[in-house]
Image (tube, rainbow, N blue to C red; front, side, top):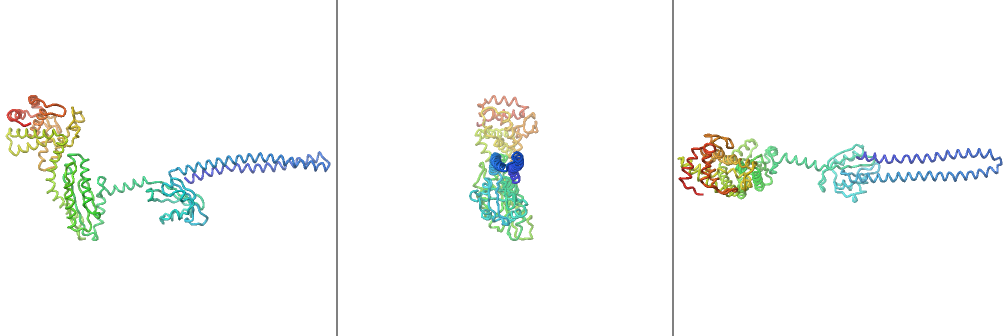
Length: 559
């Protein structure tokens, strides 16, 4: 940039060369004219006039004419030359102002320093700087103009100072990066020597690229969701802390209970909030010196240097108490902890890590089953809150399933199971958008696609609880059809579990005789006729007959 500007200014200086040539031309013309006039006029006078006195008079007047004529000629030529000089100066001035404006407005910061021959850089004075230089450095032009380099740059780094001195001595350009604390700008410094005893410094703003670089570095060591350290940093810190200087070193494993159930029930957005809330509790519970890392999913690991067992028990105890007070979507936080201690150099750090993990999983087996059971009921409560009609519908279907099980002569435990699965058959609807569940009017195709996902969602929710895993299969199949045209698997006939066939009939019957958001309740006779129509195609024909004879007509079902 500097070389280009120097070249441009050189072009303008070059434009003054013709004016110099004009001056030489005038002098040359004056000499030629003078020689010719004197020689030619003298010869004529000498030929025509023989009287010496007359000749002298004529020569005198001839000299006067010559002086007058040449004065007029010189005046004309010099005036013309001065006009050209003024015009050239005006153009040069305009051009200089133009390029000064360009320099002042350009995004690159620029400053020019100048010193005397043999002076060190500290005696160089600031000659000029532009607006961008002021923005990047925070140094006001009016405050630093004319000041010494040593006054402006009191805290310059020694290595950068050496680079600038080298540039002044050798003329070789140099480059380095700098962060300006008072302006929060990163910039690249490009220094060159345009002339002897001059130093030009150009500042290129690289804040954006440096921030992106720092962001990448941050992400390489931090978990994006929680801001905690990630596995990469954990592995590095594990090696660093594996030293007697940090013993006793405690490794604590933490695992969120029921996260998959939360994700399946409420979606991953709520699951992420659950993880973030657990992160807040861990940050508040552990100390500044503890290194908290998220290994991924629901797993966390904490490294606690110079910590004994009593301290870690107190920390975990406080955190457990705090989790009981925190909830996301009414699901109380639950975290299982396990820890192990390293206090001997000869003990393998990997063995200590494995002990902590094993201990954590033992605790998790004891704690998570009960937590998942509670979560199921919380999920049902959330569904009923979204759609109050669903609660009454589930209770009625549960009762119909119980009566149907009794009518079929099932064992008492099978009847209880059937009653429970009837209550939970629509649990998957908790993940369906509330606007679709409560819509007044028929659903469009896209909304039906969403609704038809609820058996699979219900299956995932229930299968996460060991005690309910078998029921999960019944919920998954409760919208299958006897003719194989149902969903989600397209099961046919006896491929459909008995419990699912019963739920399908009870669910359809109650849906018809109950008020819905888009219609009034239908008469019982109409519902029975629809069941009969669907026997052998939508429903198991044998079970439809039992349901009508033994449940609808013989047993009074509360509505």
